[in-house]
Image 1 (spheres, rainbow, N blue to C red):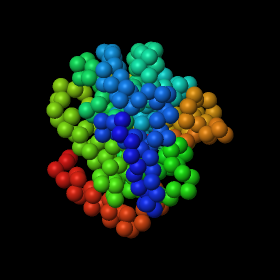
Image 2 (cartoon, helix red, strand yellow; image 1 turned 30 degrees about the vertical axis):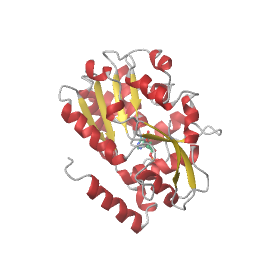
Image 3 (cartoon, rainbow, N blue to C red; image 1 turned 60 degrees about the horizontal axis):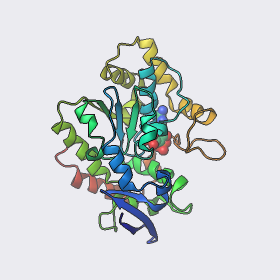
Image 4 (cartoon, rainbow, N blue to C red; image 1 turned 135 degrees about the vertical axis):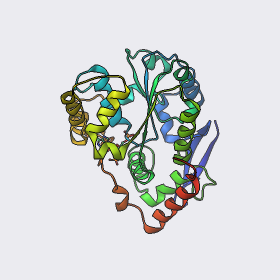
Length: 295
Ligand code: A3P
């Protein structure tokens, strides 16, 4: 497993581990409970898939928790919070045995790129929900996430950004290139027309949560009354999920004080409070360069 250091925006070295194109902060490895990243990836790609598995795929910080809570309520047919948090069904960190022990129907979730999702998902034609969010808000959200777990407390957003974009790091970037992630999913969907893949956008969920919950429900093949779908959207609003998470959910990522890390601000456009003009222009230029010929 190659280990090397990346440089943050102030030139400080940040130790990372890379496997199969996935780059983790070295401090992140603790979440694998002693398994190597290789073993984890192999476990995920070769895991036993069930006919009724549902997979939520999203780049980190794109709205995975939100989507998982909605889908879990739809699957149960009840607008009640699940005590377990979405981490309990997260392929990237859970062991094969833990994933095996989940009762069907499972709402699995992963931040892995399309080429590393379980092979059985294709064979069994499971439904896939791909959640996307503007790269700039993802970057801000990811920065706060990493500050809670993996990077020094005094790292600023400007220090962090090159770790995500790969600037001055010979193209190496933390987790996976956001651009490659999005483009590869697009190609995957095009190459697997036999699969049911729904593209959801964080910004749409924000603008019309009821409409997006209805869309999800239809996609999953349910025919629930509007009142139920409206209740699901309401129970999964940012404030209500934040409170549920703090009050009783078994979220292993909670702060010692019990407050939630995963429900930070829940807004569209918070990036405007964090990006300098130069950083914004840089991301825009990267976007133009990397996302041409995409949908
Ligand atoms: P912010 O850090 O911008 O607040 P993920 O679940 O993929 O880790 O994504 C986390 C992001 O989704 C966080 O963004 C979090 O606040 C936001 N989020 C979670 N639930 C939400 C909801 N119900 N409405 C809006 N945003 C939500």
